[in-house]
Image 1 (spheres, rainbow, N blue to C red):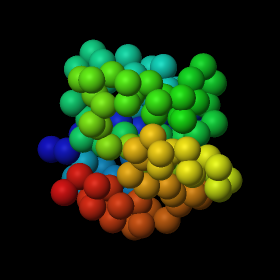
Image 2: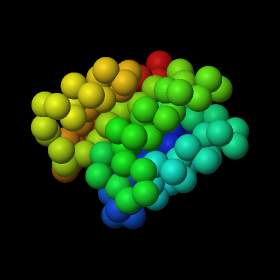
Image 3: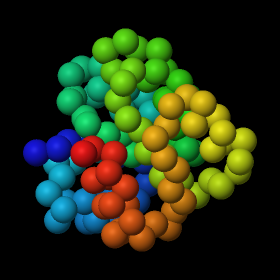
Length: 121
């Protein structure tokens, strides 16, 4: 089963993502911020994809992406940004750091499932 790590400080958003992806057959793990996500990944969580918010406490999504890329063991992990942000400079920075996609909240569940299937195929 394909494991996805959902990183968002909003438990509601994490529940919405789980509600969209679980019926599609994905196994899901959760983290409340970028620091928690990095700890899980570095501890051996074998996520095929990370779905990550931008605005979070401790370590925001772009900082997490930057740190993820600097850790050899997890640097290749694909990341899909899922955020309320639509600022071009954030999107450009995420793409420069290797983010595989950018979706704006609120999201359409079927579009999220399609994106996740494409990124984990």
